[in-house]
Amino acid sequence: MNRKKRVLILCTGNSARSQMAEGLLRHDAGEQFDVESAGTRPSVVRPEAIAVMHELDMDISRHRSKHVDEFEGQTFDTVITVCDSAREACPVFFGAARRLHHSFDDPAALEGTPDQRLALFRRVRDELRAYLADFAKTT
Figure 1 (cartoon, one colour):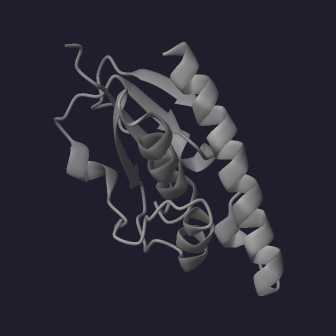
Figure 2: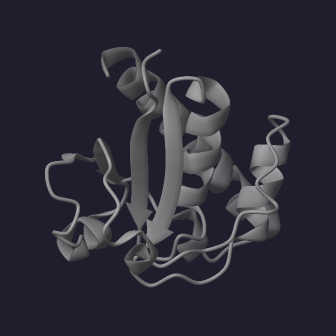
């Protein structure tokens, strides 16, 4: 039996994009990947991220925001950064891991009405899902 490939998804706050990406990849390709997420400056998982994932029957309400240092010394097959600042701050301790980068808009940074914020969270969630589906097909 082949072992699952380990994937770490990094963002700055580990509050929205990387949390949604972790949930999506685990749901859509969990038989293929062991998925974790972390941030360079972790905070809390955004309620909007939990809400828009719940719309797809995916529960990330028990996720917690983790600092990338929690994974020091662990090996990953792929490290994916989903924002530019995380790519710049990405630690080098992941050794031979393949590194991928795609910057997604930060829905947590939008100041607007609750409906406007949820709309951006949904758009970014859907963009992440498409990106990760392509990643899973080619890995």
